[in-house]
Image (cartoon, rainbow, N blue to C red; front, side, top):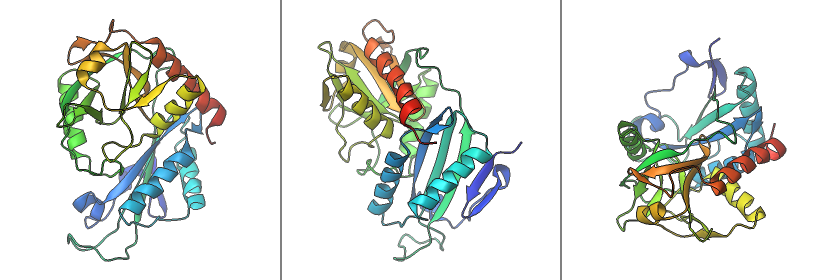
Length: 285
């Protein structure tokens, strides 16, 4: 059965879906997107994702394509029509369609596209440690906006795959890790502190990151938001990443250097397990 997509008011088979060649998302990457985790039919942190969508649109002066309540209905319809129990739902909003011109008028009709796919996540106890490499961070200065302008991220992820790695950590001009190509970066020091970069313009404020911070705080773990280097990560007790698709994934190697003993650390695995519990108890249906 063909997957069903939503495109500007229509539910259609995904292989028939399309947008105008004059859509500014296609021409300029002029739009934003969100990805929401679905586990056992439940959406993780839906309202936080919609909060971030509204923030990103506001920063780019793009109006919401519909009310928040209506958007939630479309999300649930797409999940139901595609029979998604565990997987991801993706939606993006672009500024709209017009003849190609860098400048845009004040009022345009935003375009909304939504898809969903089944994805099997390793269980809470079965995530294996992965390898990351480091690459220079070549992105623009407003990384806090979840824009569709992802070319530097794609280049970084491709370098990771070519190196036999799962992810690429991007490093700024001062030698500090900003984040992964599609994830937030964390380390655990030998003193037991959780370190992750603060949510300034330098990184995207990950929703899974936000949930993990709340879970860690409930467990009375000390969280320090500051920059760290790849060398500090290698010398620490643990490293891991968070994202909608990786949940909480331990990191065993950074540029072929093991983190601690190279195995999944107890803090990362405890947080991963707690995240699955969180979705089961608190996520939206």
